[in-house]
Length: 365
Ligand SMILES: Nc1nc2c(ncn2[C@@H]2O[C@H](COP(=O)(O)OP(=O)(O)OP(=O)(O)O)[C@@H](O)[C@H]2O)c(=O)[nH]1
Ligand SMILES: [Mg+2]
Image (cartoon, rainbow, N blue to C red):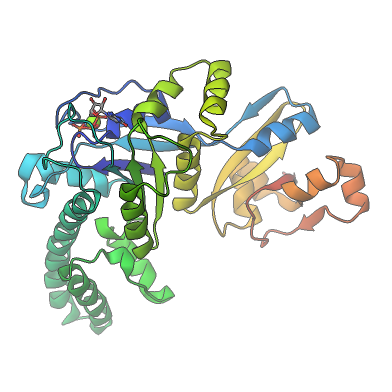
């Protein structure tokens, strides 16, 4: 489950990566500072854990994690090999979703590879490279499948889907702007197209006019509007500032955020949005030893979810005693009271887990 941080060179990708991961990746004021991707593991902020830990008097809290890749900057011509482009594109192909950093900060001291600030042009530059790379992939794949379809007519459908995607791409539109039926979807996903990967656009704004609400900033507006056209999300942050904040001690951090009038740092917002972008949700377990969040894909059934904790629990699954976090809190954190009110459900193995389910699995081995 990893996300790749992509964008033009020198737009603040490594700065953002370091702010999220504290990994200390090299960040410098020149393009192509990053060549090999940096990998960082980030815990997913979840306020529910602290509440549960209090209720259960847990000794420790174990959050869940996602991985970020800090990828090298792409430039125009990347899909034709410019600036090690093919290598960098292959790094993007390995991730499940893209965090696209777009420069929205003015700073004459920081080189912009295109000379000036223009978020929409930059988005288009990157997206076109992803699109070109996808077209090349599709052309090869179509050629191959057409041959195979001579012996196996069922493959004609695949050719038809690929042709349809290719013509969308040729109109400079990303594959993620298209819709597919359930049957087509698994094939489309298997193509692993860059322009079909889920994406979040990050408007990297300047520290000068920073506020918790940047929605009136014209650069941010432009990025947000574009994101909306792709049904994607846009988060505005100031990577430079977030990096500074990430270097502070917990107490200082709180004061600083209060000072700026922000309750939640942009990074927390970003990490949460990334988590849901990957189609992930958390179920929670709690007891005196630990309160813990577990990652599953949306739509996972109770028995498979149990397997996240231990394969024995999955194998010997009997039922899942489940209550939603909200209902537990509404019952004053009192499980006995919640049970009396009938809020604790006994779910079977086919139950589709919901985000924030607090679960006790009963099993038998
Ligand atoms: N003023 C300002 N400068 C920033 C901000 N974010 C990053 N920078 C600066 O921009 C320069 C490039 O930042 P990096 O994080 O190395 O950029 P990158 O996108 O990783 O660059 P490559 O790895 O070369 O593609 C550094 O000098 C940063 O300090 C910001 O929010 N405000
Ligand atoms: Mg970098």
